[in-house]
Image 1 (cartoon, rainbow, N blue to C red):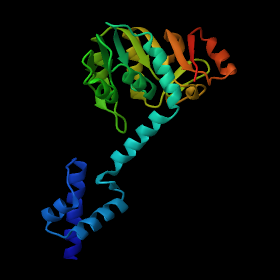
Image 2: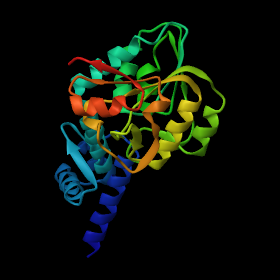
Image 3: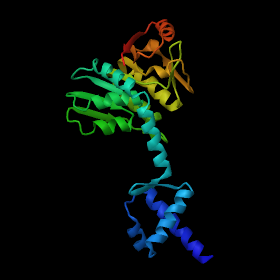
Image 4: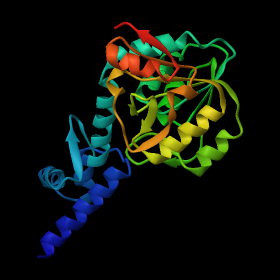
Amino acid sequence: MAQKSISHERQNAICRMIKAGEVFDVSRLAKKFNVSDMTIHRDLNKLQNQGHITRTHGGVMPAERMEFEFDFAARRSANKKAKNAIAKKALEFIKPGSKIIIDTGTTTLELAYLLKDFSDLTVITPSLAVASILQFSAGVQTVLLGGILRKGSPDLTGVVAEKVLDMFMVDLAFQGADGIGLNGELFNADMRIAKVDQKIRRRAQKTYILSDSSKIGRTDLASNGTLSEAEAFITDSNITKERMAELEKTGTKIIICKI
């Protein structure tokens, strides 16, 4: 019984080390806990079987981090060609000296990649992913909004983010959407993101909605406004004629990117 208790305590300690981001290998752990390499391998296998960690090639990470990284990578790769085309079109509206806001979507993230070598540009964003892309860009001043880090996504939301937005007025805002109704209604999967998106549009002279055509005709949890509030909607050429006709009724300019 005592041996089981010692093993359990050691496994809990290993789990805490991994979640704290400590760098280690099996030999170091074996030395730290004064056990064999084989014992550490058994501990790691047990922690993985219990769902606490994920063993990767050459390392270990918390299971929730692995799940998040795969989920975010999957969302980025979905309809990648369309997102790239939309981002390139959006880039045409950005001039040197512009002050812009980029929101938290994966299509707007593709736009951020295109801005890395831009000169004389100010980018405000609630997205840690966007900020990380632009942080070493000499010609881009990046302003990261404060706020609450949304669980499972690299986004900042909440009252702090909304209040900080009140400090700024920008030339352009670029937003994505989790769904766009055929009546032009814009949807987010998270109510907190919806509130931030509403505020972003009020702090920009012009807003462009960037979304691939798979989001059209889809709804989600929180409505945050309509396409009619935007300067234009940029989407891809996979949009059907029927859906195009419905969206045109909103009076919003629709820009189609060929893919």
